[in-house]
Image 1 (tube, helix red, strand yellow):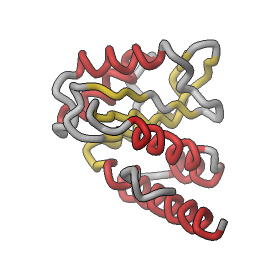
Image 2 (cartoon, rainbow, N blue to C red):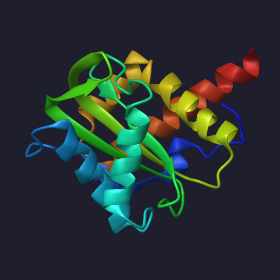
Image 3 (cartoon, rainbow, N blue to C red):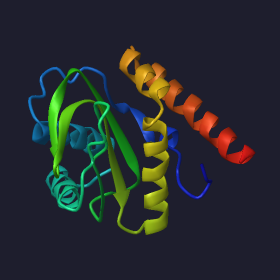
Image 4 (tube, helix red, strand yellow):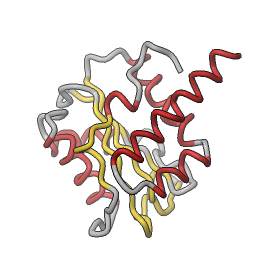
Length: 168
């Protein structure tokens, strides 16, 4: 992991973590709900504009990556500062993305300000994808009981990946 991009743990706030998405019935409700969390913490100016940006990005390629994981994201001028919302659904929410679909139990919604360098944006996505490929990381998120468990898992696995990339 490089120092050029913010770490997920730097932009994941207590107020943007939702461990029980029991009332969410579909992908649209999911993205809107997580966007609202970002709005409530001052990360985005407009829920509607950000949701539209997420769907515009969705039209370019899938953000569902199997293993019950989705990470919708958008770079938009409605984003004030980089932010991540995390949501978890015990039963999963049907997440259709391009030609891929599945039940999303772990969802990271990433908001990137328009002025951020594209290379930094890509680095954030790559870092998150590396974390999500780790079964141990996904399992720790599924078992998390509170924000501290989630942020602890993120920090722990970010450190493991940083250590691994330094040794290569």
